[in-house]
Image (cartoon, rainbow, N blue to C red; front, side, top):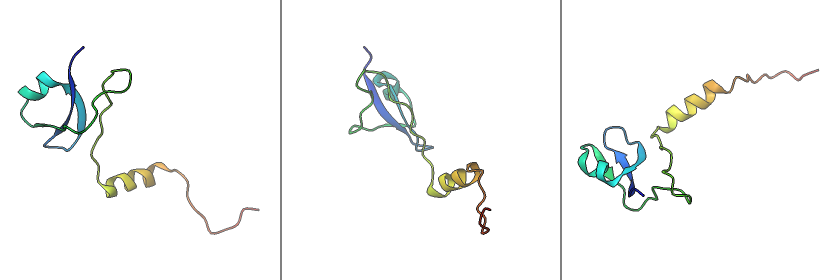
Length: 74
């Protein structure tokens, strides 16, 4: 079974799981030693994309599709 590590891409701030060999040869990746890289079954964890609060809030606002009204429904 490969040795997986959790890494952070320096350019974007995204976190993801890769093999230790790949992490050590790639420039621009920083190994995060205190994070778990695999789930209980041994499968790599999904990526965690870095967003700002403003971007996340805008995405939620745009995606809601419900408009608030001041009028009571009859």
